[in-house]
Length: 226
Image (cartoon, rainbow, N blue to C red; front, side, top):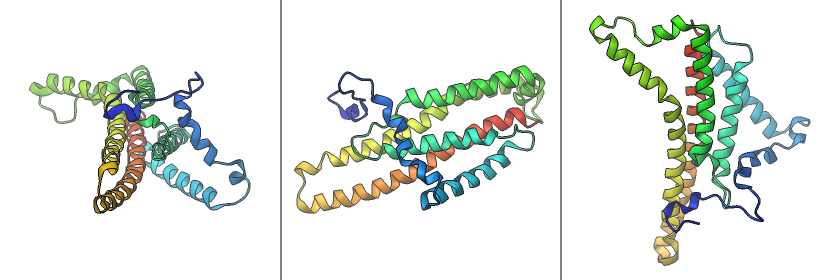
């Protein structure tokens, strides 16, 4: 373990087994098979969320999208959401706070979109580099700016998710470290603040997973909608 503030994000392994990323699959324990057989509140909630996301992603993808493509983005949203929530529980490794996981999700998707777009719609991809009504003098600069903004998309996607997860956990860790030397009044204030921060982090977990999935959907729609 590192003896600094970021040591809370150090993955740990016991019995010499690489179990660091097991938390990424812990959400499967929440989806018990009986929930898919017997009607339950959790089953109804998951179905409602899936249907809502499907209708929204279908609208973002447009009529020219491939059938069933929204399922991939719904699965991406669910995976990130459950990983974000798992990180709020004590002694569970927060997988979504590491660039290793976030970049692994963003980079292959972006590369897939780029390869498909340049191979099948080359003219359409070139047209995206120069917005409409751009003066001829500014066209070279717009091509450069659009190319850079396109290349850094996987980095911005992964860093946005990672930074938001790290920031909230660090703040709660800083406040939690003060409880050992705090008086009773300060201790009660810290507990109330921690509860409010935990509520805020729960909202951030939902928002960041939604933003990641929506931005990925919009990047896909730019390739297919022409």
